[in-house]
Amino acid sequence: MKKFVIVVISLLVISVILSGCSKSGGSGSGSGKVTLTLYSTMNTDEAPKFKKVIADFEKEHPDIKINANFPGEDYEKLLRVKMAANEMPDLFDTHGWAIKRYGDYTADLSDMDWVKDMDEAMKPILTDDKGKVYAYPMNEAKDGLAYNKKLIEKYGITPPTTIDDFVKALETVKEKSNGKVTPLWIGGSEATAFGGIYDLMATPLLITDKDHDYSKQLLDGSFDWSHYDKLSELLKQIKDEGLVNKDALTAKGTQATQLMAQGKIAFAFISGSFGPETTALNKDVQVGLLPTPAFYPNQKPVYTGGERYTVAVWKDSKHQKEAKEFIDFISQPKYVKQIAELSSLPPGLTNVKVDNYYSDDYNKYSDSPIVPYFDRVYLPSGMWDVMGKTGQDLFSGAKTPAQVSKQMGDEYTRLRKQNQ
Image 1 (spheres, rainbow, N blue to C red):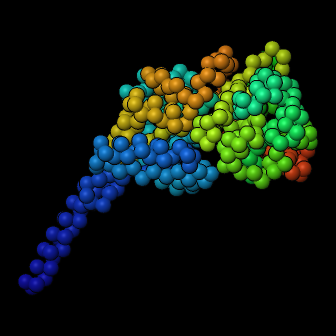
Image 2 (image 1 turned 135 degrees about the horizontal axis):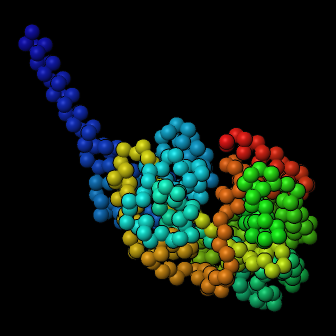
Image 3 (image 1 turned 90 degrees about the vertical axis):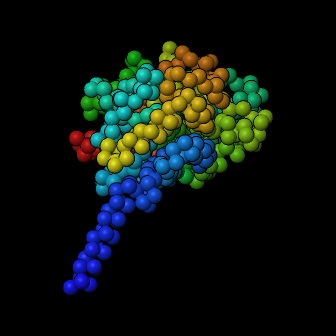
């Protein structure tokens, strides 16, 4: 009997000890530390710089560890799986879909100090009419057409502001370089390269010209997709005239920086850190960033903007307090500046001035409107993949421009019904 009592008492003591450990450890190992899981869409060049910011945070907050993940092209697939299982990371990047895709999974950040400094352009993208703030904007996307400044000047080309001038510029590069310089380079082994081009050009074609504004029809589902033909016809013309790299379907996006640094590329629809990374390889090459050229007379070229890198907090996280501490930390002016500069983009907050790589171009084209990404406003979730894949099909010859538009229309209709 005594042995039985001793065993029971021993088990109770162990149970109390284990219970105490589990309560104090959060998601840690019983040491009192909390581990926050963070997922970001930052690329392989930017992630190491962001990790240094994370290390600074961990140094100042020794009881909080950040488990940072940068899955690249697999990000969206991974997050969809996590949403389906309702097992989201404590901190995650909404990459353009703060409200439409991730809204039901995000905690409200409206009580945080940095909110008062949020750029006005970001407010309709990251807040709703009830005042909820869905994510913290680490920077503000501003995408367009990259070009080799010295090369264009060498060939006597004025940076194009219309699509007609853009095509003429490509033809001039091909002629004056004797085919040694690729006029337009596309790393199309990944469908996202084609998706990005269609997305940037669709806005000036279909939205921003008052006589060719189909925004209402795109939003209510009545859009005639034959209007989309012109984008594919333009890309087909560029391909047929040899104004794009022959390996556009197999080239990898990671090749672009090296090729631009070697003076082998004139234009590319690549933004962000592409410019500074190129100049880091060859200081004699300076990359400019133009707004997407206009399709119609009297139409201004446009930059495409919105969310680039954000941090949202999972509404069901057990560590919302610690997650918000991390956001508080990176919203300090010192880190706002660092993060904006690592991505060569404007900051999402207005209390910091950043002189980044493309500042001269942003100032030169300051009268060009900044418009939201076409797919994020006008297309149902899932259409990004369709845009990219149909672009690959166009370049491979598997589809004509009309067939591309038909597939876009069919998928648009199907996905609208599916998402309702």
